[in-house]
Length: 305
Image (tube, rainbow, N blue to C red; front, side, top):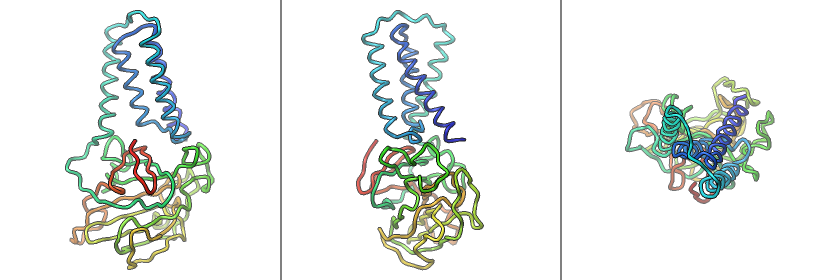
């Protein structure tokens, strides 16, 4: 199961970074220090902590910093006797990990970014970017899809900082976002809807007869597509006019979806007759700011990492 695999990898890398930091107390070396910091930074940004709790990310940071300070400042140590090959390998690995960390913030897509400013399509709660960002390495799955380079997948966090009541569940209602009301993120007209595809039971990702339940909104300058909605819970019809904050549906798990979430992507409207998904993709700003992989979004207010 991919969820458990990713969680185990996260915990193993976190454990490795803590062990490397602790060993600095007995055999200190700059290349080992660099490796400890690089692995900790990498797993802080890319670790799938949300499968347990997003609060684990902050707990890990506190423990890592405390371990590093204790090992470097207070613990007895002697110079490391690592071979040049091991030292070079540590430095190379650190450079690779730190480069990925930098790319987390910058992305790999060309600048300037084409952007769109939307309102977060939820009213209350804490939401989490399961996938999203400016291309690689934060948006791996969407990057290879047609026109979806800036697409985002959003889940909702419960009071424990998890997106479900278990690490992985086959019960749709265990997921905090399931049946959550979706509100229009912009003013526009409903260009297309679909609501007859069944919800998948995790981990099934079977596409429905028409792929996924969705709403497509068109304005004079852009399109907004929102998918994986619950069957029979789309409140608008093609041709309807919608305003920001108007209820338009409920989140579900229809289409190619591992678990309940909202998929959202935006494209420019050039009025040239091209299908919406072939138009230039737009980087989404919610309420004045853009978000990256594993960022938290608080409905009704903004919060930086």
